[in-house]
Length: 146
Image (cartoon, rainbow, N blue to C red; front, side):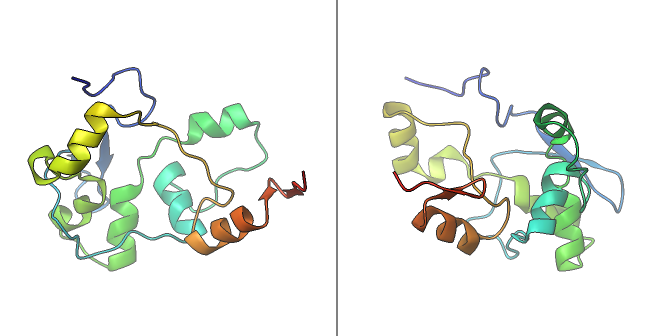
């Protein structure tokens, strides 16, 4: 049976964010609600804050510098700002997952099929620009007509 791999670059099960209200550390846990009351901010600036803890990351650096700056520590603070809540439990829903017993079909598929721990998009933000890029075969501003 497959289990969580520590070799994955993604969530390490010790992932945490701090909050702006109390500087409390919030750890990701399988304790999320079935339906969260607040949708995360999918705008480009919202995603910038979630990934880089700033709305305007320094884009003049090399890809390696940007990758080091991408710490993914701004999710809870961005959630507090977007939804105007100081309820830490509610804001922390953004980094929680569902317990395995609530998603038996997904659990079975994860244990029996290949999963990927990295995903890539053309625009780190809303869905529609990425759909547009996908439909028009554009990547990094270059049209792929082959």
